[in-house]
Length: 207
Image 1 (cartoon, rainbow, N blue to C red):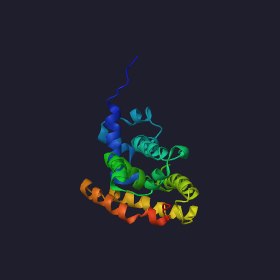
Image 2: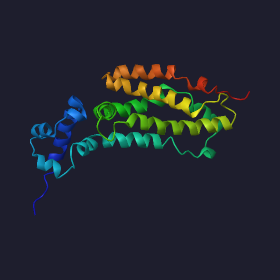
Image 3: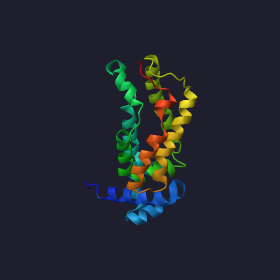
Image 4: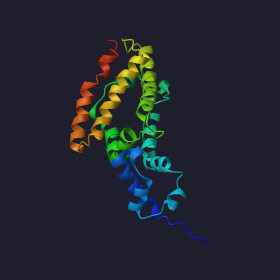
């Protein structure tokens, strides 16, 4: 029985990533990926159903990392969280935001594929779908904050979606425009000043 050549996989995925980055999914060519990886198309089809399946293999890790990141901030047991913790969660700081940027920078090419090169794949609406999930997480925190009389502004679901769409765009744009890490660090400080959630929901502690 022949042993599958596992050395092909990293080479194939690396060449696929470069092809999708340069041409986007629609204009990328499986034939060119195979040529650059020095493998046959048959070897690709033994591993993947086709070009979209290969694209998914390239971006699936960062997609899962983002879903895990958001999952930790959703479905919270608020009975375990104090008023002070609820209050502080709305104050966006460099220290609270920079872990997300570090994650995205670590996977910057794959993230860029996911948000800017995925037209024609099942990921083409990833950002819109991710904002919907992010809105759900924010709404949970907002509802609890309002219930505890810490939030004093009434924010609709539609308004949260609009604000978080803008917020997500501010997170994505540095990667679309290939900012350096130093530029991203400064960008993180700027958006922490710009998105003043405390004032958005009129966050106030009882005196």
